[in-house]
Every structure is written in C-alpha cells, then in structure tokens.
Amino acid sequence: METEDEGIEVSSKFLSLLILGVSLVIVGIVIVVVASAASGSGSVGGVIFIGPIPIVFGSAPNTAWLILIGIIIAVLSAVVFLVMNRRLEKLTR
Image (tube, rainbow, N blue to C red):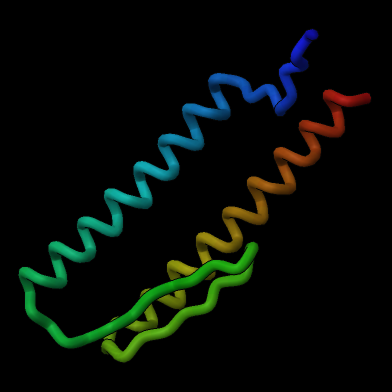
C-alpha cells in the first residue's frame, strides 16, 4: 500500500524568513523584559497589531512615540503587502 505525502511545500527562503521573524520577536520580548527589570520603572505601554491596524495603549509620558511608531509600521506593512500582491499578480499572469 502506498502512502501519499500530503502537505504544503514551503520554500527554504520563506522558511528562513519565518524563523528570522519569530527569532526577532523573541529577542525583542527578552530585551523589553530585561530593560524593564533593570530600570524598575512603573510605566506600561505597548502596541498590538490586528492585521494592519495598530492598537496602542500606555500610561507613560512617551505613549505618543508608541502611537507614531505604530502608525509608521502599519503604513509600511500595508505598502509591503500591496507591492508583494502586485508582484504576485504579475508572476501568475
């Protein structure tokens, strides 16, 4: 009896980018935790992305910077998505 190998083929470039992205997120979390523990400050803030929409929260005086960074990242992610979508459409034609 033959067994069929089911699944999705993933290119090595995509897999490398995925591993790099997850690694960067983990490194970022570690840096934030270490910096917070070292400074002992009681301020809190963060940016949560749901798709391209940033949700910003914070109780620090630098929350405006979080809003600005969230908007910049949202715009950049939308631009990258549109550029990649157009390139994919050109390749599939």
